[in-house]
Image (cartoon, rainbow, N blue to C red; front, side, top):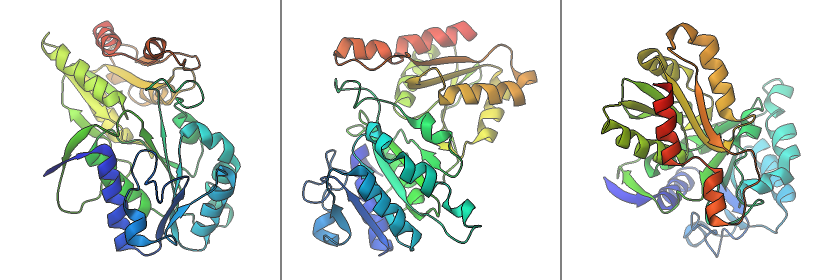
Length: 323
């Protein structure tokens, strides 16, 4: 096992997949010579050259459309959008074209494309660079949505996403890039659609994903000192959603708390809470609780920014409430 930073794990995944399959290429703003703003594509240009590591103009709609077209003819593009906020410029290409092409062609065509982007609050980047928009893509049939929380998951899931024959929205949290974790030296893939129990427990199920997984684990370890054993389930993949793992965990604990950074209103947590009430009602000992971001634009001020997203203290208080 080697200890890698989250961004290094993503970089390794790209290297491995581009070496394995000559049809894989990457494109985006500043990803070639600069190696990307978060250094995820560092070194790719030197090995694979400008035909497979393509710097694009600041024209998201155009180069994303080019990526969709490239996928349609059989290549496997990995398109990088610097901030998830900027995906609002490419909704037609992703939602109306990439997500629907296989269905509308009667299965005759596929769009094996990965859209890499990063989101979430942190670093005082204000309202147009700090959003959590995963629910937008989660809502769309035909799209897969992946949000890994650890270097191990990031590497394995990115490899799986690149090999998948469907369009995958791969969202990385800006505060995860410098986090570290153990990663096997040998090659591996993490299957899409499989949640991971990051910490087993018996008293309450805490359902989360992305950066909030780290906060939930911190809260769970603090609660353990009080004798409360929280089971932390990291979704890893929002769509397809691993309902089996969620239902089994909630059936065991009888209680559920859902934590995500995105706004509470219309968030992924609302859909999961409804699913649990519909399919695990008799197993629950109380209502499902959601701990989510505030329904507000993320402010520039660092202290106000912190107040807009769930804290460890809020997660601890929420678990105590359901118990």
